[in-house]
Image 1 (cartoon, rainbow, N blue to C red):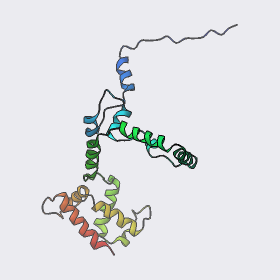
Image 2 (image 1 turned 90 degrees about the vertical axis):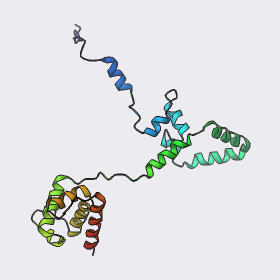
Image 3 (image 1 turned 135 degrees about the horizontal axis):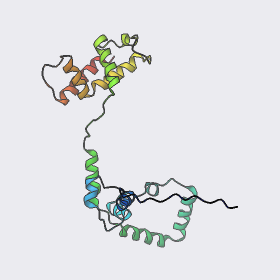
Image 4 (image 1 turned 90 degrees about the horizontal axis):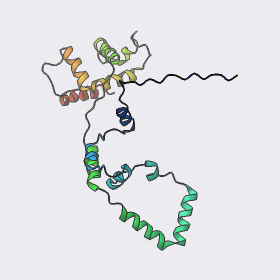
Length: 203
């Protein structure tokens, strides 16, 4: 006797837009980089676009892992057919004409100084401010504190405090709360103050 298969009744879901879902799944997303977006030609493939810009589509093909056997074969082929290999290389160079301005713009953007967005977590800031309020800059006394649960050494604690002092937003707020600042200072001035304090702490 055959077992009768039970088929689940198919339901049409009116709330779903299948066309939109398919487009979302197929799309690779928008190009975030403005330089690439301006130079991008939508009629060409991504491989061709990147080649023309002088960028690598697959880094594994550009920066290959050296293979002794393949290197030796190339040397032998060059010795056997010197003229043919030279012609092929010339053809390859002539085919690809990179958009040099794209690389120049990208390099220029890469050289620009970046805004530091690093921030310490809230619990770390609370611990550091507690230590600074209680002990000032006596790092060896901090190691004996009951809140030093992880038994950090004085050098580790000093490093933590230095990083905290190097973040103008958090350190500036701490100074304002404690009334150590008479007027509002810029980030650059706060950095200078932090550096001066760090220089004083160095042994």
